[in-house]
Structure formats: structure tokens, C-alpha cells
Length: 303
Image (tube, rainbow, N blue to C red; front, side, top):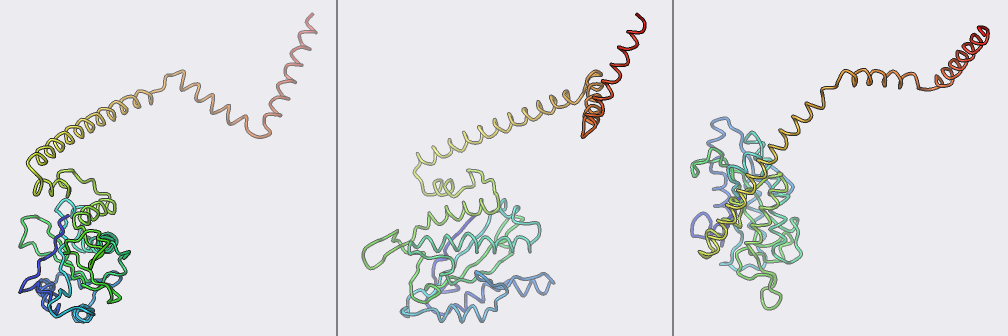
């Protein structure tokens, strides 16, 4: 899962003014898809789907209490699953889009809120998302991703929230709380794996990618060795599991071939179980006693 915060700029991602330009950009592929008769996804929030762009712009642009003219009013976030992750999110574009919205609502936004260390929940975050299916920027067969526009202020328009701050869990001074983006990426990845029961390989984890990009040479070498060892252990485990399954199947087939005596015994057992049910026990016992008495009488006459 690739997550990044678009840096503010003088163009599309200029966040010191209105959100109109970014919201319009987020609809850039809709017209082409509609002309081709392909369904489009509207804006969505934590609880609603198919929200109009005008509503998004108005809601973001009016949630700016106590912000200065040059302050950031919102942030743009990209959430892009890998091709492997997309495969388990559904079979069709619509299924994948629904799965993505579920991930944003149930995992990403809750983790985004908690990471401010201000006791916030997903309900405190004002955001709007838009699903994109454009493959022009990717060589992958699948390339669905999500753009989020998140207000600088919370839903109550009281607290300033910046995921780009360099403070981390600050308890004193002008800024309290802070933001740990590394922790967000890790928690968002673990949340995805849990939500979709995804068996993530270590080589595609955030820890591996982050160390290979930002770690020292010794850390990178150690991680590569760890990944290689992990793969070998997994291959050995899978091989042993396969051998055990084959062995179990052979043993079960042998057990399934009963001998002639076993077949006769099993028939006898079944008959015994049938005739020993209910009041039949008393009847059979009485009848057997009468037969034994008659045999004794006959023997007595022969003498």
C-alpha cells in the first residue's frame, strides 16, 4: 500500500486558498468514462456516497475558522494499493471501489485520526474521497487508487490538524500532539492485511521498503538477509506441509480398505445395534430363557 501526502504547490495542490481546483481535478476522468458508458464513482465521505463536487468545495472552504490567509486549509492524500493488493479487493472495478471505500472508512481515516494523539476518532475528521481508475501513470494491469481531500480543521471547526508537522507526540509548548507518519503507514498496512486477510510478503511491507530507501547500508544488507532466510524457511515449511498432506492421504486410503472379517463384523455390529434398541432387549431375553428351559426338559426325557 503506497500512501503519500501531496506537497503544497502553486498549482493543483495549492491548499492556501479554495479547494475548487483540487476538487475539479479529482473529477478529471469522469467525463471520459461517462462517454464510454463506464460507471463513475462520485465523492464519498465517512457515511455518504455520491456527493456533489459543489458540496465538497463548500464544506471544505467554510471549515477554516481561525486560519490565516496563507495557512493550509486542506491536505491532499493519495492511497494506492499495489497490484497484488488489488487482486484480493474484488473481481470488478465496482467491487474494488467498494472495498477501497470500506478500507478508507474503517482503517485509514481511524488511523489518521488516532495518530494526532489528541483523542480524535474518525468522526472528527472532515474529508472527501474520490476513486480513480486511470492506468496512464502505471504499467500495472490494475491501477485503482484513491484521492482524499482532508480539511485542516476538525469537524467541529475548532482544532487545527496537520499531518505534515514534524512534531511527534509533543506534550509541551505551542504545538501539542504532533504526527508520526511512519506509524500511520505501518498501522494502515496492518489494518489492510487484517481487513482483507491479506498474506503480505515481507519484501512488500512498508518496513522493508522504508529501510531499503532510507536505512544505512548495514541495515539494508541485514534486511535482505532476513528476507532471504524468511523465504527459505517458508519454502521448507510449505514443502513439509505438502509431504505431510501426501502422506496423510496415502494413510487414509489404506485405512479405507476394510478386510473381509472387518466387513462381516461391521455388519454384525450394525444388526446388533438395531436389535438392542428400546424394549426389544426385554423381549429377546425372555424368549432366550424359554428356549433354554425347553432344551433342558428334552434332555431330561431322554434319560
